[in-house]
Image (cartoon, rainbow, N blue to C red; front, side):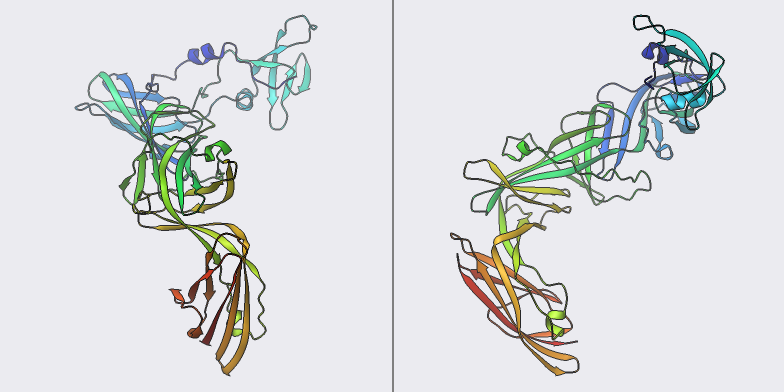
Length: 477
């Protein structure tokens, strides 16, 4: 028999469930009554207004249909009407909601109804009763004078067990000096609501320009559907002590979204408290377990810089170890974005994944790689590492090693760069880590100082050509 729950006339049963003593239900408001500020770490600030009629004095209020992930300790409840004071005396969250397992647990030692189909293929199921003995592992029933394991039919209940509610419900005891209609402002933090940024970058044929499109991917696993909510996206790190879970999967964009298509107006960023907020212009309906994408950024015709890089070896053995060897490597394919108005950007970009495409000979986009960028402020620079360059190789060799003292060495180096591209010269950036107290004695191309122990050379290499960078380093360690 299928183990599923049949509640006779479910909607009417829930509606007919007796109200808890002297409770006043405060149902959700209509479209537009909810505002969500969604952070990227599975946390959201929910603000909603609900209307209710209150008597003078104390009242017990029940706010149904709050998310099951609501943080009861963060609740703020106040009157939204001027001159109508409201004092909150108590508050709690009742999240014990119906499920087959929970209904059976609350029915242990009691009789339940069952619809059992044992009268033949064409006969309707008969109504039977059984006493629930245990649900610790399997469901154990006493039925027709026998002990049975498992459910022989569909469960039928005349009412919900006491204490069980149809949906997670916020409870509050309030006091007001006068009777009348009130608009209540309810605010709380909830988990299960998150967003992430996804970008597509469509490169021009020269790889010197691109169109940038950004989408915000919203996900809702809070247990509640939000109808026509006003949503603001918050970008930046915010400390929170609740609802940190493993719901961290990145939602991939569909392939067709990589093509250059018209986009709606993107939200304008508002800076506050070290964060950036992006209010969405249109209300959004976000159902439980739904993922939805909205436009976040659009910057056509931006300037980008393709930069093949031979990365540093990452260890000092090249200079200090007499037996150090090196092997040929492919240059890394990197793309530099400068977030300035002069480069066609000049807007704060939330952290996210940037997927890079370029049109092939038939005009269809080809995927060139992807990388994650951190929050990029105006004036900042982001470097995307897209993989290795098939055509550009580097053979890094140490050609001489001289020990001048116990802690003083002098080494000579040659880096041979080869460009297999038949139609394009390239500028390859060669990076190196230099430990201890160092000095460049000779070099075929002047180096740039990136930090105290990192230097780099920019080496022009012609199409189908070869260039060797040479330099000598004296190192004291």
